[in-house]
Amino acid sequence: MAGSPTIASLFAQRVVIGVGDLAVSNNAQVVLSTYALGSCIGLVAYDSLMKVGGILHLMLPDSTISPEKALKQPAMFADTGLPHFFRALAGLKADKTRLRLFIAGGASVIAGNDPFRIGERNARVTLDYLAKNGFMVKHQETGGTINRTLHLEMATGSVTLKTPTENGQLSLAA
Image (cartoon, rainbow, N blue to C red):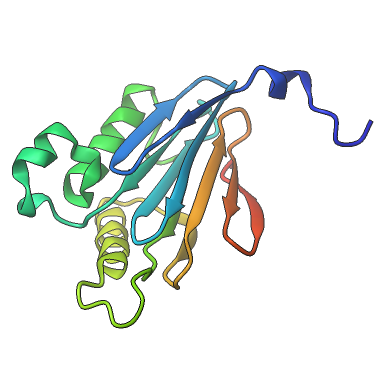
């Protein structure tokens, strides 16, 4: 019957990544999800050979505004969260050269003129870090004024991107 759930989907576990947090997994029955990326950045990484991946939901570009907070919650900031995220992936045997990355968010969600440009700054710092460290971004959906939600299926590397007006799917496998 069309639309019927598969056996695997009946037993899939959803792990929700909150603002300023991250999750990595090598469990094929896990779906990682993060919701309502506005000015925040959602970084999805997937190694299709090892079936290892993760999502980082970072909130701010620079931890110098609150070093104590960065110690307790490093994923909150780009400068501390990005290295932490890639160390966690490496801990599950993800290989930097095989990682496929998708970045979303970095929107300007404040009505009117945003003097802080947090979304723009988050995207720039993230992209600069990735380029400096030799990571290739396979897909990017940043900027604008809309929020985005991401889901990563660990079994396949399939990423679902949801916005208020669209649902899209892309693959980070190979």
